[in-house]
Amino acid sequence: MKNGRDFPGDAEVLRTELRKKMLKARAALAPAGAAEKSARIVKRLVAMDEYRQARTIMSYVDFRGEVQTGDLIVRAMADGKRVAVPVTDMAGRQLKPSLLVDFPGDLEPNAWGIMEPKPRCLRFVDPAGLDLVVVPGLAFDLKGYRLGYGSGFYDRFLPLTGKGTVFVGLAYELQLQIDVYHRRHDVPVHYILTEERLIDCRD
Image 1: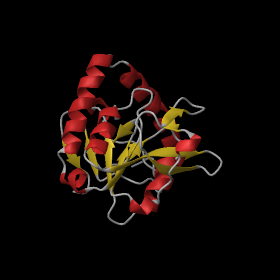
Image 2: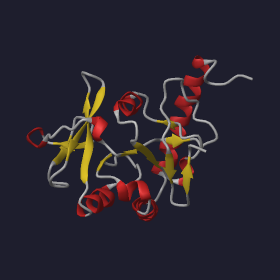
Image 3: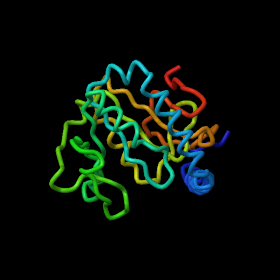
């Protein structure tokens, strides 16, 4: 049977169409509904043992309708955790985690409108020292594979973390798909959290 792994050309067409579909579906969420669902997802995350035991976490800063992470970052800092956010190194095509001291005061929009630390607020840390990474995505399948925007930043970054680092994908229930047509080098998350459930992708 044909699938994206064996027929990469076909898979890229399918991935492109799925990106369009997911962007449209996510944009259709009412702001109040998105905020309510995000709050439920964050509540589910902070109840996890993996969160409670984590000393250093990295979380994306939400952008373009992603599950909102502002409350998570505030909560984690209040809980005494070291919180890093990703900085995009376009020249090196990689993500670099930078610790926050003041949220959102440390941040400003980068060239693409994503909130990142200001140059004077950069405090880079070793990815291997992260205990938990909160991962965004346009779509996820139940095996933990994710569809991003196509640049591959997280798939290059996640292998740089420690052996025990836990990857948690945040998604609205509508973003769960039967297949995201993952590629061989794609890195799955260990858990997916939606407003309805926690999915252990390691099973």
